[in-house]
Image (cartoon, rainbow, N blue to C red; front, side, top):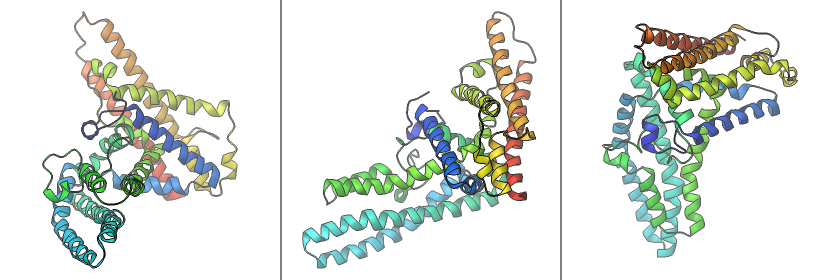
Length: 350
């Protein structure tokens, strides 16, 4: 497990400790807002929007690159037209205006165009390849929640930092290129730091928003990149994170026995109270709590099964080893999907 992420590590889904800490921090903020605002509206809105933001595929990425590349010449032409107006001002004022408009006009404009392009590309890919796009959700959640942290450079377009053969227009909005233009341009040190902040801040807030939805979507951890051998169960970083998550789930399930949660009495609507009990079994145990515990039990059972096979490594592995592991993975995945489906049922029916 790495300490922090890089574009290459995120592309391959390598888990980082800093990404996990960020996700826990974002979930904590979401719960603090629940306590402060006495409403779960932000949780509902985030959970309903998040799946639409986890629909990235190679096809949608390529389509977004091509669309942005076709728009980029028009954006540069507009920028060149504005640059001609700077000639009406003295050199110092012209340089300052150029730096200001680059950071606070063109960058936001490029970000807006990139967001529109991403929506169009993702929607088109979803219509053309719905199965492939929907099945990409667990892996995309994994990359955002467990593999991406604030040390990863901000991306105006998903995948732009790790794609070597991106079109020329797309390469112009890579972080290194934008950072070079900012540091080489006019303006003082404080102005340049503010300009870099214009790039970083929206991206960090966007990632924290996505990570906060892990309060609902963490069961996706049971779905993607599952191990198929005993060695994988014991050594894969993601499987170790699954075991940590299993311990956390057990502690949450048992916590109402020792801790009272008066916040549930302050929540205004039945839906808010139901969402709180979705996370924690305060009043009673529902089906989604049972499926969580089943997934935890399967994970613990897999671990001890793998250890037993490792201790008997000198013997031939049982013929049904892969069948048992595959069946356990499927059971965990079904439990995870069922748990999240219960949340959607709560939101849509209450």
